[in-house]
Length: 160
Image (cartoon, rainbow, N blue to C red):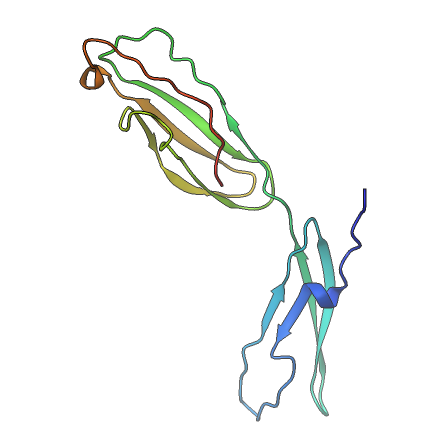
């Protein structure tokens, strides 16, 4: 296994503008940027030097992490249900990491649209938080063909 070396602070932080001239009373907005590398936590110090004046010090820090999550439960068993009754269950998308992420529910792989509903269909999960998604298997009476019900549900990946 090759372990990449930690990037130098000059590769991680950027300051714009890097230099300039201000007249007395004039203001300038300064932008500090952090360029994330996988799994890096860094600190640095920047200085603003005023000609014939003081030096202003700024502490910079940044951290990056990978998205880590789980979905609980991963399987649902609704048991024996009358075909004319809806069944509702909940699942949770747990953010196990330090980075917020967006999620969406993809029901496009189901063979019959409208049987399963999810709410919300998309959202954002903050670091260390969880999102609750309500799943509803609608009553099948309006989806029955020739008096029978047949459909299958397969496990599909979570898209983030």
